[in-house]
Length: 300
Image (tube, rainbow, N blue to C red; front, side, top):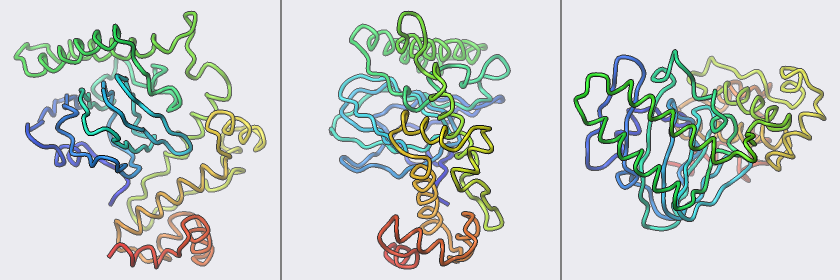
């Protein structure tokens, strides 16, 4: 089923080198941007991943999150969280850099990615770099790649420290007068909590599963805030209303299920929390312009 990319699926798409660094606790690996086969000018689908990524990239591209997009034209550091779906659109043909792929288990029990501000908000996860910091991080990523290939018995402990340094460099570069911008105000914190709560319901892996939070009121109650307060906070941070963000995510999952499963329209409708399949069909047509059955038939 589409909608969640796991590490083995990532590796199956790579060209050239074989990446195989499954370790006893968690997972850690380094990948070259040049080995990722991405069509120029075409954005990949929104996906949740089962792993965290930190990417040092150089090129012209756009990163799309539900409700917001970021354009990169030069060196940048990008932190992506498994609970936040995104798609990466390559604009320039020439792209280079390094990608560090890891799971939360690789860092535990010493720390977790969410302890760092760069993993607390998609709004601040894309960091343009000046030449000095770009060169510094380039050396650090190359050192991680070399260390990973080495035979030092405690290399993974060393790699944890080096990865944490990358987090700190990204976190430090987003600071203003020594204070962190990410998650530093109530609106950003509430937005992060909302997105985390919403993404926690996905992907839908079987037809017996049913999401429970499908309305602004339901999310507000779960977050212990008034629905108007939630809507105001989300709009300030993302530019979209609560309903728009929910509908975008429901539509994304609906399309993934229609494309990636053989479930009936009724089964998909129920899994997405619609009381009646005709309500789901009306919702889908209003968002996409065609009904679910037509959308599915166009795929075949």
